[in-house]
Image 1: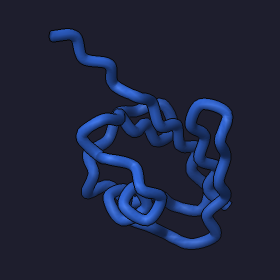
Image 2 (image 1 turned 45 degrees about the vertical axis):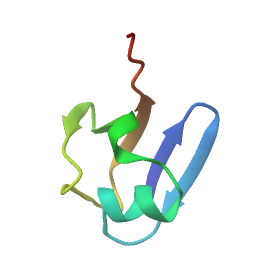
Image 3 (image 1 turned 90 degrees about the vertical axis):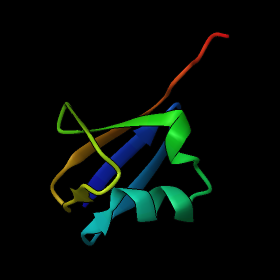
Image 4 (image 1 turned 60 degrees about the vertical axis):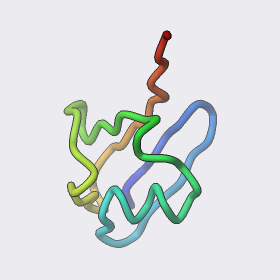
Amino acid sequence: MAKIVMEGREWEVKRRINVLRFLEKEGINPEEVLVLINGKVVTEDAVMEPQDEVKILWVLSRG
C-alpha cells in the first residue's frame, strides 16, 4: 500500500492512483501543495504506486 503523509494526516492507497485524482478526491487544491514520491517532486499527472512513499507539503506564498 502507498503510504501518503500530510501534516499529521495519513492515508494508505492499495491501488495505483493519479496524483491529481487523489488530491481532488481529498479536497486538496493542487496549486497549494508539492507532492513528493519516494523523495522526488512530481507533477500532478504522476501516478502513485502501492509501494510508494508519498509526502504532500503545503506551499506558502508571500505577497
